[in-house]
Length: 389
Image (tube, rainbow, N blue to C red; front, side, top):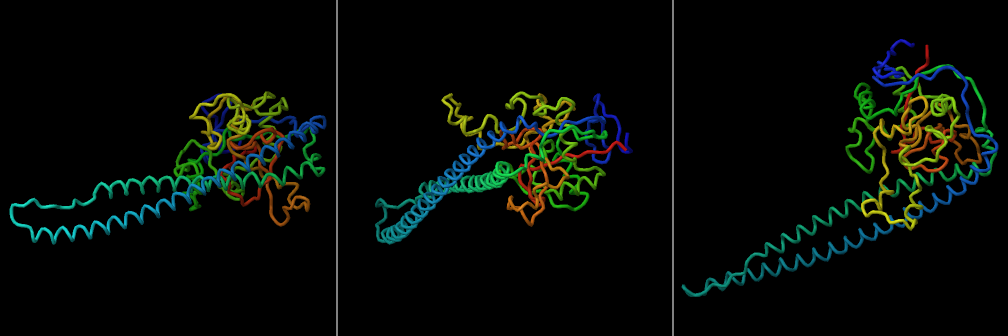
């Protein structure tokens, strides 16, 4: 057992004292990596289906964004009309009020005085209207920002999927058996609380606020997001750990069985994984009746607490190795400098596991998705490993 590691209260778990993380022990032995040749054709077909789905989703985001832009324009025009009307009414009131004051001076004592009450109700209703429209405008603008980001993230994936169909990239994922030394891996993704301690200790900036919750970074049991590969490496060095290699990550996910998903070979559903399963478009186009409160649930996927969905744990005891957030690995993408990828000039690092927005093969144990190492997407996180010695 390495210095700084001690047994935790629960059987099979250990505590790394540097950041108080709970880890599991992965013993030395063979690890099944990649995908078999016989499965390659099936996955190529799945990639075609995934491309169609993602394009349809991107188009839907674009239409939703246009609708909200139209709403903003309509409200802005309405506000302008209301403001003009309110100005005219106030001007009319001032003139009428002056006339009333003159009339009061010439009236005889005892006669009924005619007064024009100040239109407080009009002002109150005007205030309520502008407060309501301001709320709608803020929500619409936030939604547009979210939709733009989600569409951008989809479009980032499309060139990579095209590469998978046009090149010999599959040779990098051909099934093989390797022997790995033992190591320890975090049983869950790094939390906001753990990363916040690191930031405070090193004067590092907090991650940016995600679109769905401005207080997200202060929800302690949720995975940290919006961190680059450099951020993740800085944390791992600070607490004397490492980012996992692809091989270590896959062994932790597959255990000794070489399964397709961390929980086994059963198709993913929301009892196993926090992800876009079944795909949102299929759910919306289904003839099944969807409750009103769930009708647009697909628009608001976000991370879950790191200890949730115990049914989806891997054989080794790790949570959320599929879905929730993409996880940085330390490996450079083998496609980094390929001219075919149009990725030249930037360093790409591998992520594993997919995220809450992922579907299909993106959630499988063998799939690896490259991102620019400086990327700070709001579906990107990490976990760490420690060597035996």
